[in-house]
Image (cartoon, rainbow, N blue to C red):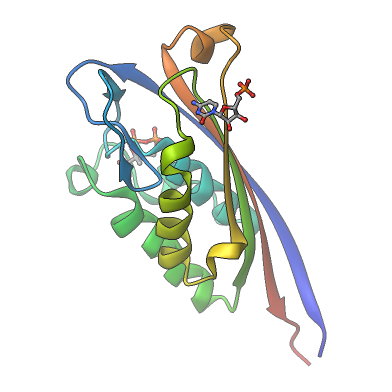
Amino acid sequence: MAYSFRIGHGYDVHRLVEGRRLIMGGVEIPFETGLLGHSDADVLVHAVCDALLGAAKLRDIGALFPDTDPQYENVDSIDKLLSRIVVLLKGLGYQIGNIDATVIAQAPKMSPYIDQMCRNIAKCCRIGEDCVSVKATTGEGLGFSGRGEGIAAHAVCLLYREDER
Ligand SMILES: Nc1ccn([C@@H]2O[C@H](COP(=O)(O)O)[C@@H](O)[C@H]2O)c(=O)n1
Ligand SMILES: C[C@@]1(CO)OP(=O)(O)OP(=O)(O)OC[C@H]1O
């Protein structure tokens, strides 16, 4: 059996503001500010979505789910956006090999929540928890993330599918 492999990369940033919840990888993290966006602004899940879409050459999250469409207002990014992308990929015969992501946030500390983020993403993608990795780093006080103005996330993924004979 022969397989084709495709890698993808995703990157997203959301601004931290007062009066919003901080949702990261489907986990609500208690913090004085939260991420601003049209959806729940789950920056980690958005980076994962874009990595998966990029690997399959399916444009990006904004092309699929426009931020002018009221149906995506405050939407749960795992349940409503990532899950739709997983169905799209399955329809094209793709399987997700693994996902690796990095969150860049000066604060809050992500480490207590990382395992739950991996579980949430893995469950939605219908892959094992061992196939999803989430890491975090501070901005070392540098740039917008270092100043606590926002949070960024990068993700890479591997897709594979069986070649047609
Ligand atoms: N928001 C964050 C940032 C970092 N971590 C953890 O702390 C470690 C040290 O961070 P550096 O910026 O000095 O690399 C990092 O390896 C993470 O484990 C975190 O939990 N939340
Ligand atoms: C997810 C969408 C849609 O609700 O909105 P946002 O939460 O603003 O997120 P962004 O990463 O800017 O881009 C994709 C959008 O279309």
